[in-house]
Length: 393
Image (cartoon, rainbow, N blue to C red; front, side, top):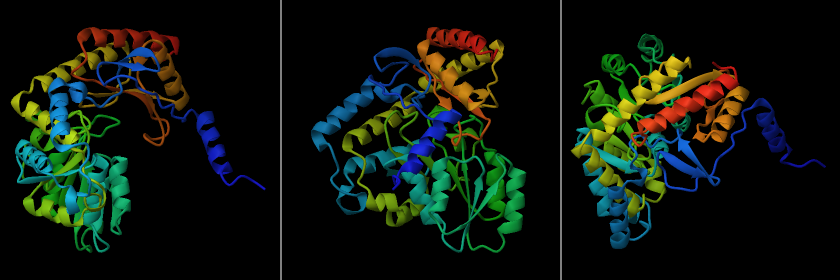
């Protein structure tokens, strides 16, 4: 009689054989430019800690103060007994920062997408989604009974063609796209998409997880970057990347956020974010409002590293942001490259299928404002030596 979990054993072996098995590293220090991983000090080129705020003193002090005053947990879901005054303070700060009427915070960015997409689109409706949208958008669409139409990546003309063909017979239309595409670092053509949304009277939702704290004035995101305030109906952001903490949010009209308070299932059925985390989020928003120094440092670091990698001969794709994909193609090569980098004190994880398409494996480098020029020079030197050793250069 066979083991009922033989299929798991077989699939894990297939992942190892194909070079797609993901070795999950254990971090033994606070997030920063350098990490301790399994007892080894390595340069961190993996984290989404764009502005270096994950271990910032003001955020830690805000968290400590909230911990003493408000305890370790909210004790309930937001809709019953878990909404604390500090949650409302964060939402007001986010609305002010984003220049919108209101904001609603969630436990994570993925929960914000799940709850919002499922609440906005029903069985009689249609969702129009970019083919390279993040998994949280894809799964959010799957949670609805709405028809789903996929348009070619970053192709406003393709979106228009799909809307013209499929959009006329549906009650409600929702266009949803990443703002910054996290694997390639390119931007959605948001001005064109916003125009199309207005022409077809569609709701426009943008996942700006990798744009918050990176794009726009003081890091206000992609809508601000393109001057589209008031033309993006739903903006999703996360507090776990550039803001350095944890959580997600939706920014938009008061009517939208009030509707989500009544209908977004993660808001209704999962406990609220802890007071300490919320306090750190508030401190991060206030810090960005007061200064864009870290945003400017992030972009200066990104330009320096990208120019260095290109001069060495690496293919860094079509990134328009600090996300720097080092394109290698073969999954096994990418895994081996990552392994050799780690041996050379560089933490740069390989990304392969299903996170990216087959044949598009890469090392995705995440630049941070926390990096010094010396850090970046160290990284460039190690990438060059490993690249030559593995005959990539």
